[in-house]
Image (cartoon, rainbow, N blue to C red; front, side, top):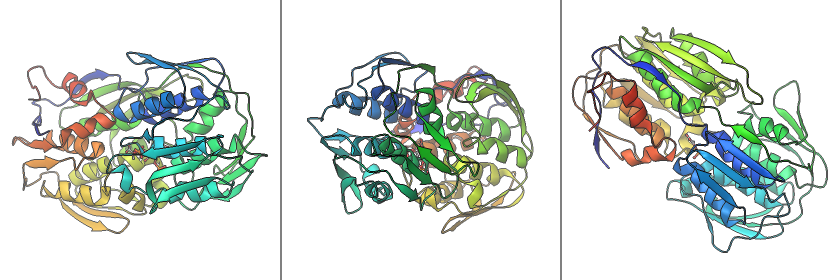
Length: 436
Ligand SMILES: O=C(O)C1=C[C@@H](OP(=O)(O)O)[C@@H](O)[C@H](O)C1
Ligand SMILES: C=C(OP(=O)(O)O)C(=O)O
């Protein structure tokens, strides 16, 4: 689907917004609810395609789930009450759902097959099957990819050193470790988002994270109990509007009840380092930190990011590239080779799309170098999501700095994480500046 994008708003973006629920936490809330006793109620659940893939997969595994708007009720089956699906589980476009579910199903007493869309079917799965094999898991891949078949069986405790910085792989190992025959230890390459650890504790699981922030010890066979939770707003979704307010002159916006988990909120750190006008009001909340964030336009400075900075900002790196494109001077993003195995090769798609703005951006094996300019020389007014939600939304934000009309092809990809994106953008624009 090709759509027209909004051009530069006369006086910037203004107003307040609560973005939809966090994608990572919505996936995890469903899965932990499924293996707990009693009911789990998730309020402000993200009703985007990726999380609906998890919801449907769990239903196929015999878990009763109802949904009314953004409130989801899961009737927990405990760890022993899941049943074999009669059809392959269709994970759509969702990498998180695929990898976490693989860990969850590895210790079940039945076989499961997971399939996905063409993008997901190209993403690496040995990163999850190999460390799970140290627990005795039997997972068959198709040349390293989906379709994958899990031959469920009893699992052993493990002590595993991860070779990729990935919260998905860590979470798959934690979920599998719940069924092991003793405590398991997982050592991360670098600390990554800790939503699984936090949520598991809320449901009654026992796990310790060592002072190094990357060694996790999981106790098996916990008695998990269903919970009623409100999912925080997704920082990765809020980041599009934060970027927009930062780069469109005249803007000042407020985003309410946004998740501020420190393992996840690197975008705010980056924005502040670039000279962004950011103020954060922290709210009290059990489990996941959250707060209100106010952002106003400012003239940004270039930035340098290396591997240690990457996990906390991994999904926002397209937006960091966009911010850098407006900052006068050279920005360097390195240690970000994980971007090559997302919904698209995001290093390649960021370079292709930002080049259309006349931005000097050079592809590197593990990132990019951007020679930013406050004024762009638009080369091509036709942008493309390449089927990747985050690339599509990044270019819709870029368009807000242009007075020339532009279009976006593949706009439907945005439904993967943010079906209401354009409606929410509209709320921050002066009335009358509609997306057509
Ligand atoms: O665990 C999660 O919820 C996620 C982890 C990250 O992926 P990796 O674990 O592959 O880095 C991130 O890119 C993805 O959007 C969500
Ligand atoms: C990489 C992403 O998600 P997933 O890995 O779950 O497909 C994303 O949402 O940017």
